[in-house]
Image (cartoon, rainbow, N blue to C red; front, top):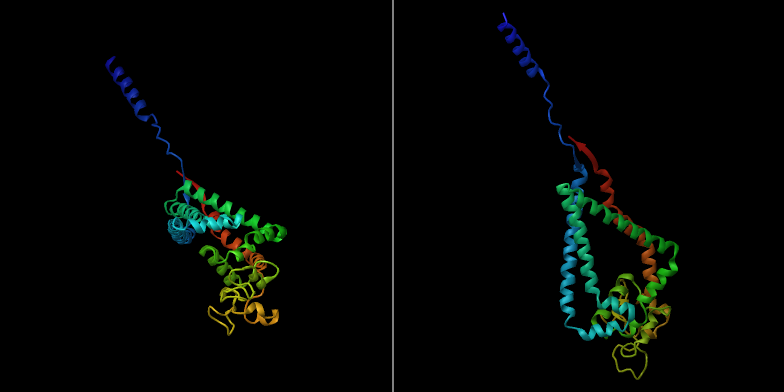
Length: 288
């Protein structure tokens, strides 16, 4: 009579153990960055292009740096120009640094968008924010504090560049590039007649033996003029302002540079801000 009672108790204990709920492990919660594919492709292409440009600037800066070691005399002449000379004598370092920064930022954007790496994308976002702030400050200075920008431009593009125009190839190339692309001639309010300050080559004096006496550099010449070639600036300093206008650009380069900045500051700010427009489209989401 007692054995069935034992079996009944054992069965009830076994059924209670089988019916006990088993707790399942909770899935871990991870944070993933969901980048919109429509945003990812343009972001990759843009940063790949900037990556190539940055690598090119780095290579060019390195080559110029190696070549500059062979022209110590030119560097000494450039450094005598104070701030502009110091800037020019280390132009290859600035070019290499700019290329390195562009290469690094574009690599963060390219790899971060491709691998959805939050650390690289955050670095890319901070770099773009800094770039936008710099452009904003420059825009404020150009529009609301034009006097300070004018002082910097006139200090950089000074009369001393004309005086030592042929003393170093870097100075000659810089002046020619500025006058050609900004369509100007001269560095002060005297405009193209500034070139009389170059005693060795362009000064209008009968005692000057140079064949370029009373002339201006070819980079001053108008491209649409009938006077073309390396002798297009011959005897321009002997002409009146009205006659010279048909052959050369008669405005000063600091004024042309200031006008160029005012006309293009919005374009530069927009181009710097365009890559950042892709960033807000990427969203954070939690996935189980």
